Length: 256
Image (tube, rainbow, N blue to C red; front, side):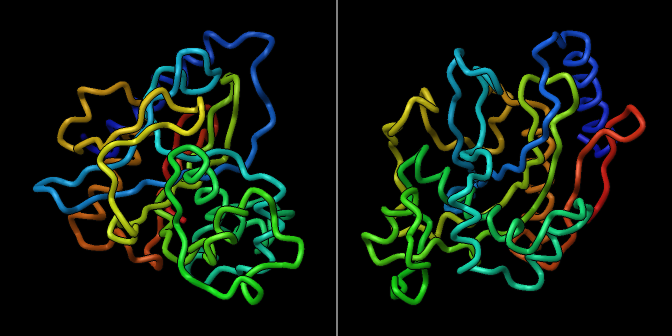
């Protein structure tokens, strides 16, 4: 699918969301982060996805990547784990005046925390805890500290950004990150969802996406990921990334 065709698909869903919006439609846009774990061991790449239950308000009954909104504890830890210059440049493009380098550093931490909470996977590297974390260690990262690990924010590569259009019950300014599954200590084949966030968790081949219920933005970002994998740039944090948002009443793609 071409870039223009993907934008048309996003626009079609936006119009559908707008037509069905009620009094409960969300207006506040919250920062969020999600992690695309790519396993290249097979003949075709596969990505880790979870099926959200029908009872969820946002993305119900769809396969998504692990992730969620940025929490206060992500910001607390971000002060101790600043970003490198390239990652900061990617995550600080086209942001409001109140968005600081600390807010940017909280984004990969949120993706790592949510991935652990939703899948049980720890994205971390060995580090002296006392040197890596603030004295008041955030409780949501306790599993890392107990194992002498620091969340490996530097392993995550920002690859896309998207803002949920108006009319949706939840709205997020989501940063999508990628990581090579080879970074994991072990690549599990079977997952038992640790919470009720996902009904199931599985590896999905990029050649079998039509067999799954995916949101248009999920398909669009996966298309961007596959383009980057094909040209060898998917783990290059210096590459600009697409930013999908509604401008003047239509979905638009910019590079930041």
